[in-house]
Image (tube, rainbow, N blue to C red; front, side, top):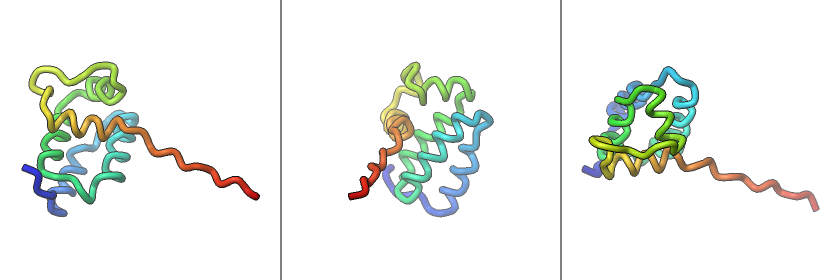
Length: 97
C-alpha cells in the first residue's frame, strides 16, 4: 500500500526506530528529516523490517557492506535502504565578489 502515514502512525514509527547505536540513529534521523512528510505505509513496512535487525547488522546494510538477503530482499526494504544510504546534499558556498 502506498497511502501516506497519519500523524499517530508516524509518531509510533519514529519511536520504534530509536536505536542503541549512534551511527544507526544518525541514518534514521536523516531519513525522517528528509522524508517524514511523505512516508507511506509501504515505506514504513520496509523501515520496520530493517528495525528488526540487530544494530550491527543494520549498520552493515546502511554502510553498504552487504545487501538485503532472504526475507529482507524485498522492494519496500530496498527502497527505504536506498533512501537511508543517500548522502546529504552538499551546499555550495557562495564566493564573495
